[in-house]
Image (cartoon, rainbow, N blue to C red; front, top):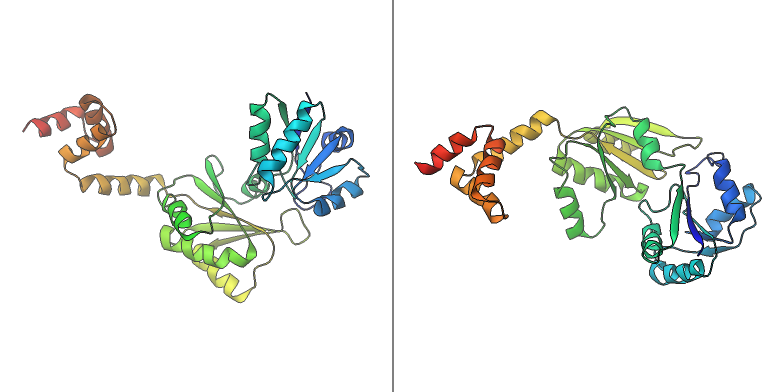
Length: 278
């Protein structure tokens, strides 16, 4: 069987591609592109004449089946997106899933990634971070995604399009308050910017300056102290019996539930036991 190569391509500057990536794109029998017209610019720049086919969000299931069938016949196929690393916030993950299930070898050629590029230059903590990609557009799903963020202590990374950035910032301020934020736009291009704001400052800026270019939005996570205070307030609203019962309803034994409740409240398990036996 053939091999599926996931080839990272430039996110802006055409020079940001590895020697290995260029060689791979020259040597495979077929390149699956998110947009063949867009990818043609890169391929022509490097004189790559390999046959291309389209693989995108709207044909990802049936086209993945077709590509897997070709891989089974021995074709080596490279997958590229419009920019960055395939499989990250794009339809590539479906092709990878089907290929692995079919026993096909999948390998990734590392290279550009907007999330890592922005995170490395934003000046906020990068030791622990969570990548949320694009927030859902549908109202119910969006509300659910936003509801997970307020107590997130890791740095939060999002992607956003210019025509939605103001609405997203308003939603973030509503659920997170006014935190530190970085807006990274036009990464690796001539007009690259990393803009440090508070969320309110970013909203005010875009009211005066029309948003341009795809953006990576990086938000400061909640401090450990604030998260602990919020947890304490949440548990204080429950009696100790209610707190232990909550964990027992999740399948824990009474002993383990008491230990969890004690940890949550910052007390000893003996204190919990004494309260329950009163």
